[in-house]
Image 1 (spheres, one colour):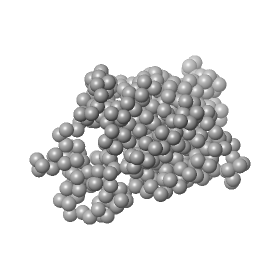
Image 2 (tube, rainbow, N blue to C red):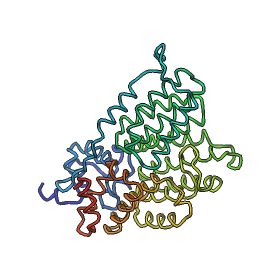
Image 3 (cartoon, one colour):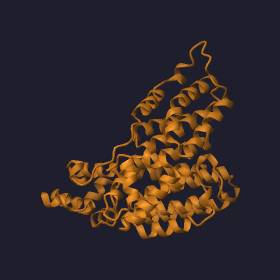
Image 4 (spheres, rainbow, N blue to C red):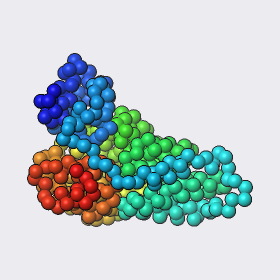
Length: 400
């Protein structure tokens, strides 16, 4: 057993799979993955850097997750934001809508004011000021519910958007369960409006993928995408094409995460044709969709597929586009984290560290608030080739 602890995580998976007398196909079926995905994991071609995936593997193998992580790996602790998340949970637990607004309540905001409030929240989020969004989300949710209870027709858009922004924030914070609740509320509130449903479905795709439910994510995203898709691309509005293309990208990333690289490529190609008509520099329904966003999605899909070389190549092409500078800081920083992971998989810890430092400069909260980013920082900092700048960053954030 001591020798097993020294093995890379992929080889530990192979060891325990053998102990449980499971073939790669049997193991893949129980995980809901492809045999190719399992083979790449065990050979170290594909990295296991999602805690939810490690937990699912441990469950199937009937072992503790620590047996896969080994003694030299410890998830980095997230910053202290539990109080803010608890306030969001309390706000999501209120039922202002079915119970109605209490008589005499004077703090019901008019719809036009609520629309400005949710727009401000989205702008704050896309500039990666996550602590500010944490602080404003509880009141935003309560006010949106009260406004909708008073004006159920015109108040629906700000209500859906309040739930969407909350779900997007909770995905960043790594709280899948609470993000699911916010997304579910958004989908229910949007029911009957095809454009609002498609917008809410973007966050649904993020939550499903975050939870490791890749099959469901791909299926639901495709259903939502083709529901909003115009009969022909030429007849679609930029908003419709942005939503449809973004949902296709979500489906592609789910396919890549599941180990189906051909499907991922095909779906991104389909989204690319829509992106060309939308163009860069737009942000319909806060998607940032356009040709550059599609290029970044190709990077993310390659990372999910374990193809670090392709991910790096797509990154270099995408960041040379003028549209790269037009993307919100949150979008750019999240992409740089993906690229840092790709360089780490390519055994280039020095460039991985540079990407992480650039992400931190672009949007400091992307590193400070995201558990996945802090875990990546800890992993890079442990590498002997990591520069002093990354070590200093890790120390300043209490990551190690």
